[in-house]
Image 1 (cartoon, helix red, strand yellow):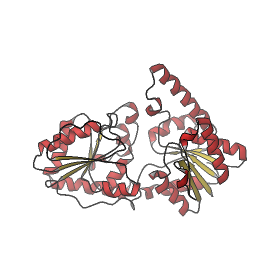
Image 2 (cartoon, helix red, strand yellow; image 1 turned 120 degrees about the vertical axis):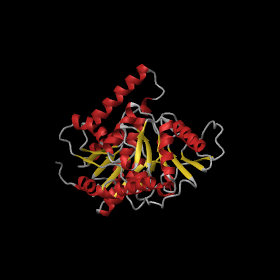
Image 3 (cartoon, one colour; image 1 turned 90 degrees about the horizontal axis):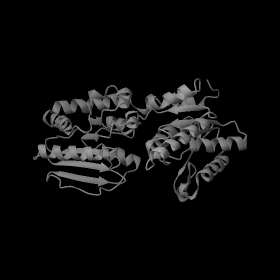
Image 4 (cartoon, helix red, strand yellow; image 1 turned 90 degrees about the vertical axis):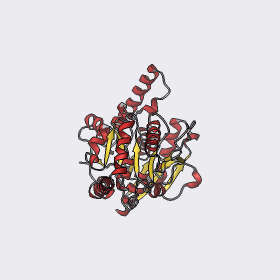
Length: 369
């Protein structure tokens, strides 16, 4: 079977597609190609890259349809309504029996689609994008859902449409659990994401500052991966070191992140974030480390065991966050217990191998059901 991933919101080396879905399909005997934004010079037999900035919206969809014609896939998996529209254009023109599936990992439209617009403009664009999303999916053949909240509207609008749940669990061959550090000697905190209020970085930095001040004899590192630079940096405690590095390739991220002691993600609890299950949560779990996350409904539903290896908190309650970290510093057994529980749950339930077979069967099925 010939399978094509058509990506417009994700890079070709997106961890979900490139390191999990694609290899599993290849092991099942499929020929797989990823079409994604990038520089043409980096294209090869497994990926076709296109320079998205060169095209207007309609031109880009036509270009993607042309790329699909060169591949002639039996199954096309799109990550956005635009990618699905391109696949529909290809199917209509080629008259091939190509199954078109929507892999839904992002809200569409989302707040990032509506940013910088006035109230009336925001409402009008939301309606237009929602109608486009609905119209496109009237002609698709199935869904790959990453989480329940994002599945619910599609299951209601398209009852009986085939689907599979494939969450964001990592393949454990990429994620190792390092031996625990003695926190009384050194504390390494970790955050990955944008340096914005919406993503909660100011909350993370404030917590790190308080932790360092409360523990003046312990060297504290706040290791950050981000595509942004910090515009202004206030005076930090002498025992706190802030390191901001650019995003890493997937396998390097898995190795370097695992060298930290506690993972923080204190994003805002707005309506969209409440219904978004963070992908990195499951990687941090597999690394065998405690997590301190904002108390989001999606996490409580998607990982109900989280209290066995971490904490869900009010992201603005710095005092509680400091108390949690201090408890780990004071109680080595508690810290070790949470480290062990995190890795055990990853091995027992939250890993790619636990869901891989369902995904492959769904893609390879000859008949819809």
